[in-house]
Image (cartoon, rainbow, N blue to C red; front, side):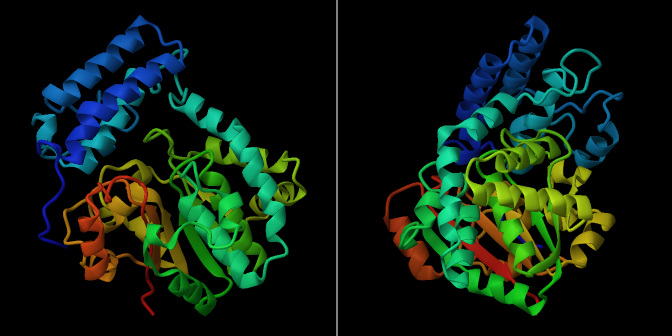
Length: 388
């Protein structure tokens, strides 16, 4: 699809290398402090951390439930140094191995225990969420177009601790300087063109970010933008805060039990939508694959192909959508994502090096800022390829 170089983890001073040598040690420290793992699990996690920085790639055990999938996904990489692997692949495999090290797959007391659950639960229970849900009540009086704008913005910025329903409901919302590409008008135009069709939403994070995603899904359904929404989540814990079905249920419960009536009404409507099939949750194995969506299997491609629009949330899904490559940032979004089988939209805050679809003046301004604008999370894009 491209001759743009694949991002790797062996480049000194690169963001990708820092993830393995700085972020992962901190993640391991926090994970081992969050749950009372025994000596065996703790030692396995520490061994994985060391192996991922100096060792070679070994496949999962033959009896692992996903051994056959990883044998396919890692063909040509087994036995090679970790640092020679593509960043997307290696980061994905690190988190898969982290589950193995904590006993997630093994029969025993830790089987099926999400190692990231303490982080997700603490975020969802935080007082900031109460304030955000309370602010939902103030949106009902907004004009329809403005309300739609606020809900889309909240879904975009939902994982930024300093931006919320509360802020986006105010005049101006998040500063325009943060939104470096904005195809939101095209997103609503695509939905209007196929009003009442099926919309797929590929979730990113659980907790505080999943709540505005669910509120936006409710808006799609109650406003007639979609006749059905299919929410794609991970079939097992993946990166630290990635949403699973368990996280969807926790977020729904948080909405349903909210003291703010507008929030509880959203939760009740979504609960009933799941009962009746207007909201469907999917957890395809490829959601945890270390590969771009260009390599998606036939059944998943067929499901997306029938959608009026597929919305992919977050940085990781963006990397998988356009390919985790060092594209020239002015590369057209349609060139990188045009293979996707349905009209596609990306809602993403920038937290890694890959970026496409920016105009030259914007790139010049960002480069001149002297900041790590590609990875700081201070900038975002709404990008759409409509295929109409």
